[in-house]
Amino acid sequence: MLSVENTSQRAIQDPSDLVPSRYALKVGNIDALVVSDGVLPLPTSTMATNVDPADLAKWLDHMFMPPDKFDWPLNVMAARSADQTILIDAGLGGQFPGFPRAGQFPRRLDAAGIQLEDVTDVIITHMHMDHVGGLLVPEVKERLRADVRIHVAAAEVKFWTSPDFSHTVMPKPVPPVLRETATSFYNEYRDRLRIFEDKHEVAPGVTVRLTGGHTPGHSVVDLISNGERLTFAGDAMFPVAFDHPDWQNGFEHDPEEATRVRVGLFRELAENRGLLVAAHLPFPSVGRVALDGDAFRWVPVIWDY
Ligand SMILES: [Zn+2]
Image (cartoon, rainbow, N blue to C red; front, side, top):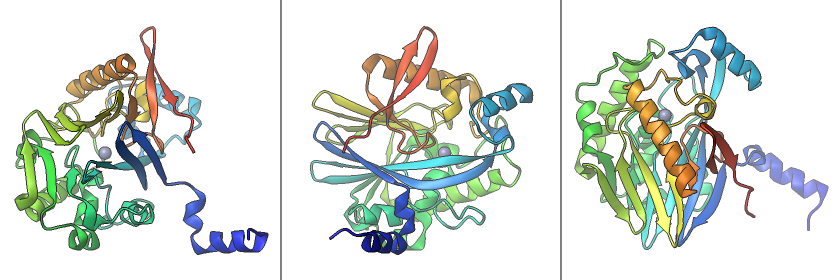
């Protein structure tokens, strides 16, 4: 029976559940789940590297965000199609000091009833540490199946053999850590990689396709079933992109191409009316893109219970 006493008891058992961190939805016959990996504080300067800092400050104030640091949301996805269980990106992991609020996806995936042992496929949108770091956590490595297939674009694997940071604007300690993490990921999983060129159907209705831009091998994932669709856009867009799609992000290795990719995906999603989820939009990051004249607008879904 529900009473004040046993509701508070439950809250004490897992206070983190009071802020929702997973959101399930159906895309036709595909079961999809967005899981928050937590948040990662970053300097706001990384959000727009090609604009006057005063314009960025004005936008941050307009959005009620602090001027110097912001919490970068981290979302990963899981999907079930036919007899396959697919993980899409893997969050930050726990091996990077200073980010205690990120790296939560393994525990939250468990809590949602998805066992890492059941994952048949992992799709990696790109090899930045906030997308592959979770696969380097010892308990995750131990639990993933020996025959798990990890899908990543050929261009991405090639890029990280000799990565170019010359067009990025990142906090100084970041590039070496990104490079080390990508190398560790490759070394750990090289035998389980399924490398694709442009496009690859991972499971019925689950297709990964190369976009480039953010990184040369950056890819997005389309879930398409029974006339419904959802695109997981990885790092093709960030919250600021709806107001300013041309503002370049400091983590983009080819910022001009990243802008073209972003605008192209926005137009495509406005046209096909499919759902959008992206790694760094605020959780649960499930919504649509509306086109108002030349401007893009984010339309979140009403939560479905
Ligand atoms: Zn990212």
